[in-house]
Amino acid sequence: MDHDEAIAYLQDLTKFGFNFGLGRIRELLRRLGDPHRQLRVVHVGGTNGKGSTCAFVSSVLTRAGYRVGTFISPHLHSYTERYLIDGRPVPKECLAGLISDLAPRLEAMVREGFEHPTEFEVSTAAAFVYFLAERVDVLVLEVGLGGAIDSTNVVQPLVTVVTNVTMDHMDYLGNTVAEIAAVKAGIVKEGVPLVTACTGEALEVMERRCREAHAPLVVVGRDITFTPLAHGLGGQHCHLRGLNKEYRNLFIPLLGEHQLPNAAAAVGALELLARRGFPVTEEDLRQGLARTVWPARLELVPGTPDVLLDIAHNHAGALSLKKALADYFPDREPVLLIGMLDDKEWEKVLTELAPAARAVVVSRPKSPRAAHWEQLAGCAGRFRPTEAVEDIGRALERSRALAGPSGLVVVTGSLYMVAEARALILDRPDGGRTN
Image (cartoon, rainbow, N blue to C red; front, side):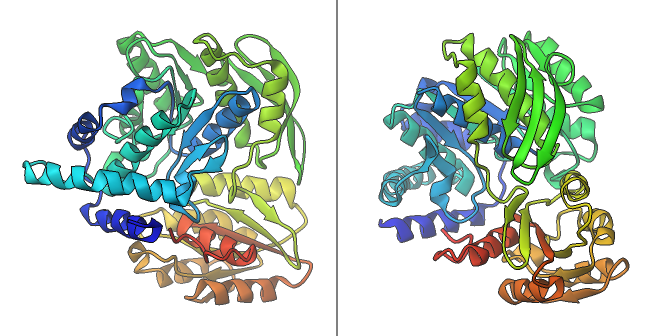
């Protein structure tokens, strides 16, 4: 297969949907020689902030001179973004080769009576094969969905992280914070330390699970603390007291106060990782945090008008975006360009964000799960003047016109829509979230 054929093959596997359980991935990995058992892993789960925390940890370890693999999902513009080494995506021809090698093994599994692995299971298996072949020192591994029966949960990590737990993916994970937290706590392994920024009921679940697993627990806000300092459009500063020492005046380039607990969790994971043979100096930590890149999360693209991109696809994300708008743009009334999927808490998101906007433009993400996208316009119209524009390119043009040259457009909601808008704004040749 060439790259396009390999991606088409992968995308065709989405027909198997969300099919939870670890039996298929374990059988596939067995046929591949169990590459996951030979990797040293930092396993990162949670509702929001998983990707940011992975980015912080990876950036610091790379700055310290380690060869660092990072597996994240989903991607913004290309499947290659899911497989990073020292921040660089896997070459397209290499990804094509990985999928080509896996295809006959999948077919053999089915012939022998096993269920066909899902798209995410195949992507995860490819990641383990790739990072082992590339001899990474550490793999920073993001949970796909949930934790306990997520495909990534076959690893025996050095450190685990659960950033936080809020309401999301209720159809799959549970209808209360405690139920969802129990699923996410499934990544905790016997004796392996957990770092978490969970609070309330979710923290109680994490504490119980760690007692059962005899796993040391590090809690952001108790064992690791941070104090926000100055912030601006270039980033923010904080003091942070870690497990080992105090780090004064750290610079965090990602916007939003909600990134500080993510950074604190990353520092805790790095300090624990140092005890397992991967030390970093304070200068590595400072420079690594300061160089972290994580696009489409409060990403400001200057222009006429300015555009702020943020994937706020659930209620907790909307609350963080709402606070960031008040903190960073107190005197600017933005135009809100939003598109969400049917299975998300879109009414709660609009209730938080629409009242702070001058006007709202609703568009349709490129996903079959956005079938009722126009209902969002009716909801937003209760708060502010609202237009529904199905094509994202035209919706972006209309939002810019409504904002005016000196205004601000906030593009948010579904990753699918934010990715396509980002591609248009940055004039990417791939046109958005394609392959």
